[in-house]
Image (cartoon, rainbow, N blue to C red; front, side, top):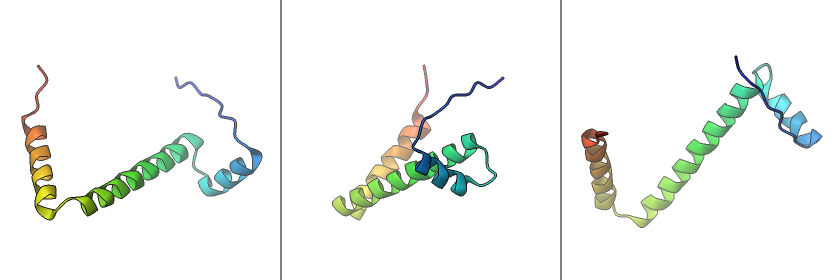
Length: 75
């Protein structure tokens, strides 16, 4: 069984969010907003990093990351 919690927000904020969520339940709507914000944040961070690093450095980081994930094992 799921447990629920209440989050207090200003009335105007609730009106705006209710309009945006439509028929969707609050839990999935808020998770969707969070995931979109996280994705946006990561993309912006990558853009900034891309400006600082050369193409060769980015490729090297990508390659190292991939190798790490392939070799990583919990003991």
